[in-house]
Length: 415
Image (cartoon, rainbow, N blue to C red; front, side, top):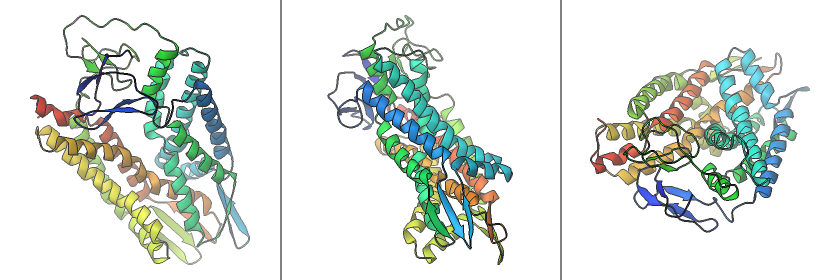
């Protein structure tokens, strides 16, 4: 981008003029506090060579994490271990295809898409040019990063390992250390924000953009790359990245209410029905989310009990309530505390993924506890309902357009 070029705030729609930033600096919206753009998240801007090194290392560690067992359990001379892909296969064979698909996409496919696209883009920039498909792949990184849950999976692995110590001897394997290293490298890769990479690509390999359309229309900022398209019309494509332009997300409030209603209905069976069944010599029993929290608390692990309660009970309820308040106040054109409601929206976006913790714990537990007649754990219908709640609330938060919060202050209504 060139100095003086207009940029729009993603969260409230306010317009500003772009200017260069020093290493590590960020420009914030004075109205809602949102980060308009930054050069890179922390410290000096990375060079293409360092980007290639980090992403290539992350790809190699990712392959090790997927190919080697995470932990192995030993009980009465019997052993049981599994890779993440084997754990997904166990769920699939038990007719829990939906849960298996959730874990596959969030822990395997989306992280692979993010790392692969970043490696391709950074390798092209290292050669001093923007590679073919540059804009499309940066949009892939944006989308995959929203759904990739490597850090949540790592916490799930730790919770499962600690939980299993009361049942059997836990033996760590290379997959455990690989996932730990992958979590760290993925956090480093978060510095490579797509919007900053778009700016870096234009610096390294400048290319002319299509001219702005002559039709007199209000400028529309691209939700993908952040470019303000002057004179653009609804449904046209961004002049830089090619994403479809919308002044506001179409049918935002309607979609948010519909997804929230579905999530609220599924939340009841998610908490009432068992998420796991345990078959052992002593009989068969089912565990709900709350019974698991109580079990951790009573067996001397209050920290894990609190983590599970917050991620699996408090966070989903908070998301449902917060999104309902945001959708309702936006629909009614409320002018109440727009900055505060925008902060609530950003918090909902941030915490949404952590509710998947319980699903990852169920997946690993089901795959590891396979001791023939001694003990076998299978997934229950509560896990399916809970996983659907997590996905529906995450989609609802992504479909809600936070700029609707600020529109009443500009004299616009969406009732």
